[in-house]
Length: 92
Image 1 (cartoon, rainbow, N blue to C red):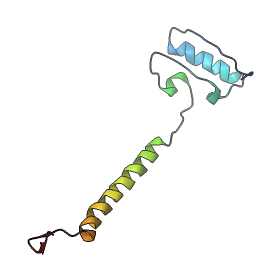
Image 2: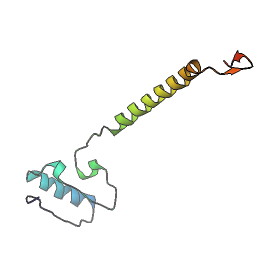
Image 3: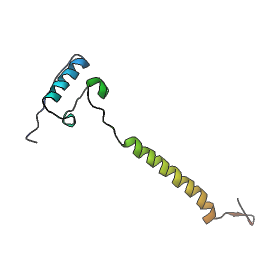
Image 4: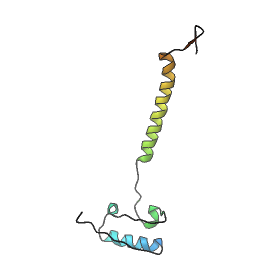
């Protein structure tokens, strides 16, 4: 924590912010060491930052697929494991 330097700047528009970020990159500061806090939700490309790909959509898709397969398995295997006899005849 002794190496941490905190800088604060107030800029009128996003072009000035992007220019300052480029200057900070030129000084050798890595992108993951910079945090930009803004009241306007600028996309990363607007400030000249690199796009970071996250794995969350793939995790959500895998969970949805696993839930669908488990639900299909559960709904198809339950009547075979626990048959419901109505009037002496199977329900299905």
